Amino acid sequence: MKHNYRIVGTSLLALAISGCAVQTQPIELSTSAQRAQADLTAIYQDQEPLNAPLTLHEAMARAVKYNLEARLKVMEQALSERQLDLARFDMLPRMALSAGYAGRDNVSASSSESIETGTQSLEPSTSQDRDRQVADLTMVWNVLDFGVSYVSAQQKSDQRLIVEERRRKVIHTITQDVRSAYWRAVAAERLLGRIDGLMARVNTARADSQKLSAQRLGDPVEALNYQRALIETTRTLEEQRKALALAKTELATLINLPLGSDFTLAANDAYAVPELAVSIEQLEEQALINRPELREQD
Image 1 (cartoon, rainbow, N blue to C red):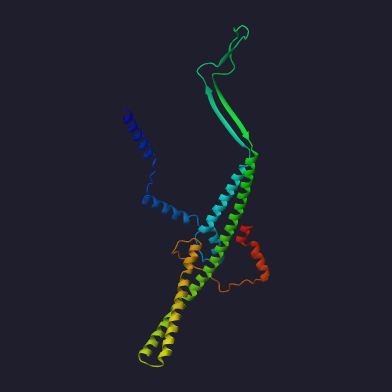
Image 2 (image 1 turned 90 degrees about the horizontal axis):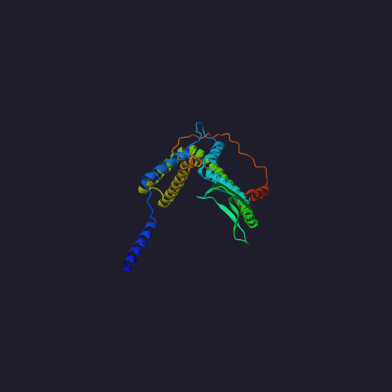
């Protein structure tokens, strides 16, 4: 009989352990596809359409407003603000409120008995109802908890400032990248045709030199050096063409436009280069004062 009890107990224990086991369910492909469609919709929604030639300042503004990395830093800053508010609330006294309903099946009555005679000296009586509502409000303020919460609030305040400096760094980087990509895209529109023509001329010159070498006309060493120079020139032109061809795509990515978007650049030939009427020492001082990385360390 005891053996049967052991078998039943072991079986129940094994069943309980197997029931507590956690099994990871694989994510279905349809779920990932729906999430991807939602992400694509959220990336480009609520953006102003680009109906006019894009200027440099407008490109910077769109990058700061719509760039995903900049938007992420904005959300991190908002999150740090909320965490700071919660840390401040922890310094307040804690208040607990409870309410309920109490009842019994008989009357809570009591009576008195004489110590000397042992007889009842007071008839049974009650001072509360059989059914009643109860409530309790408690306020607690602990000095130690207040100190810990105060230090935590100071840390959250510093973290909020750190996140703000990181956002400034992202904005600086984005504006620099937009400026570089914009002018490279302008140069690409003006130079790609010229580079293609120049590469065709270089290829023609190399073919002519190879023909002369095959006919053994002229100095062969000089011809080979000339062909090597033409090959190096072709490689340089191809690298320049590749860098210029990707500039417009990089600019579209920075201002959060869909890849393959057709837009024009409002490049002005009369663009005035601003003059910087400050000394190098002043620039160095301002950089050390306003650099986001250094302010984050401060």
